[in-house]
Image (cartoon, helix red, strand yellow):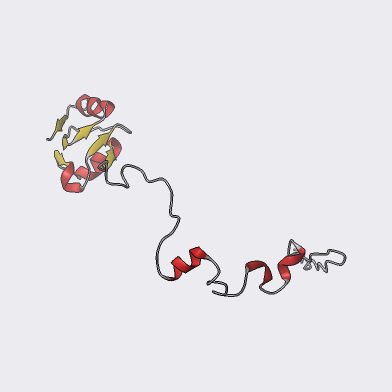
Amino acid sequence: MMIMKKKIVKQRGGKTHGWGSKKKHRGAGSRGGRGRAGITKHKKLYFKKRGIEVGKSGHKSLQQRGLRPSTRSINLRDLERLANGKKEIILREFGYDKVIGTGNITSPLKVIAKGFSGKAAERIEAAKGQAIKEE
């Protein structure tokens, strides 16, 4: 095993010595003061001091705005584990709304849910089960 020595960088001749701009390593000069210094000079800081949000912008989805209800979905491959030996599953009791067709199902299950994707309903019925849509 070879022991590596620490590289010593003395930065001779480098005019900024790792601080980027020449101005960056001069106390608090480049950041406009220390702490909350200069708060009286800036309009945004005046509002921030009083807890008022200013200039907040950004995109919110329909779901975040409460205009579209969220649906919790479960994959077909997880249904058998969820059933745990039962022949009938009511998804509402587990907090799910919709069944999506990822994976396969082997046992015949009676699944009651608000919605099914096309493939999910197809695969449930192919395994001699039932896909019942609740209102």
